[in-house]
Image 1: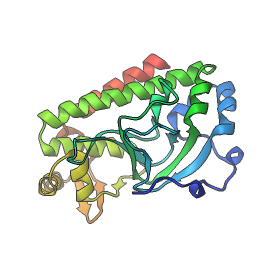
Image 2 (image 1 turned 90 degrees about the vertical axis):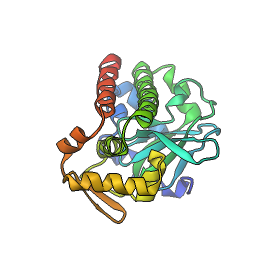
Image 3 (image 1 turned 45 degrees about the vertical axis):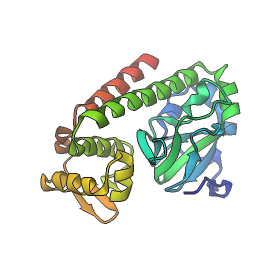
Image 4 (image 1 turned 135 degrees about the vertical axis):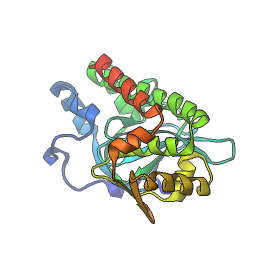
Length: 250
């Protein structure tokens, strides 16, 4: 895995970029956005990039525009377990809301390549004092991440693997353009904290129902409503909570 490098910054000047695709940035009033813009740098996110490790200080926050980032916890020497996904609806590094020098309890790894606007954590934290809308948006991002942590923990302990896989694919599908996801069975096994043969069986089950098509390194969503029906109730619960928080902080 590779840490993001400065040379991945995109060449196009920030002033010529179209409207932000990140939902949190989209919602900011003009005065707060003007205050924030000089410190934002648009960067590429390559698959496998580690944005921050568990136990390290969060030095930069990332407002994701394309792709998604996996938030993973260390399982006591038994590898990583995914506990959340962040895409264009949120920000990686939402704990900056609490403190500029707070170590992260999670590792942030890019799973779907894309782009993001990054900003130094100390600058973002200082800006929050004079930006109430940004504070509310960051609080929303943190609340949603906490909800994912709790719901996914409950999901992993109570539901069948096909149900959990359907829930995960729906969450990933929500954060991309189009219906194709570049995913290997090995990656899904890590994300769902199961053995690869179990993932193979779960994929076959969903594919037999016409819900998806699987080929090496790729999953295409064929029947979104059917996939929602095949998922456990955790996906709907997460959507309900996100909508509720969205209204609360608006």
